Image 1 (cartoon, helix red, strand yellow):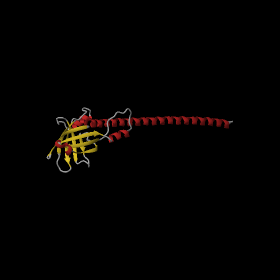
Image 2: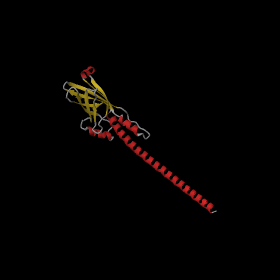
Image 3: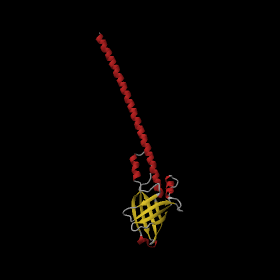
Image 4: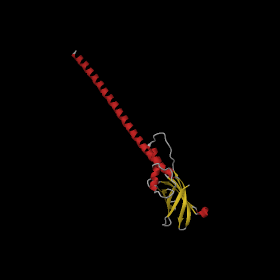
Length: 211
């Protein structure tokens, strides 16, 4: 009889222990799931915050490209005569709105693939059909802070250095660029530039207006 009572007591205790273990396991599982969900939520929030910051950076870059794109034409004076010069700046991609939070690699791809394609043509107004020379250059990345655009390539005989200005040529390029990036102005009206030939050490200056 005592043995029977002992067995019953042991069985009851075992069942109680098993139930307690199950409760502890369930509690641990719930806590673990909650911690995982909290960590995932934090990670998603961090990614969303980083994506928003990168989208804002891309938007600011687009401001510069959209404000400076276009066709500029002006005068270029050299010791061999006076010429006309035309500079055409075309952004590689246009800005567009998205209605979702994009992946970081999508935004990074847009930032890396945003650049200028440029065409520069010089000609003598008296004989524009025969005297025109120029080149096309791709993958031009401007200095957004300084407001400077360098057009150079092995296939281009000259180095063109372009800075932003206004109609009166009184504003510095970095100041104009600052106004563009902050959204205070939306378009550049004039540029100043220098032409450095590869055949001599001369540097020629020009001023061009957006057409």
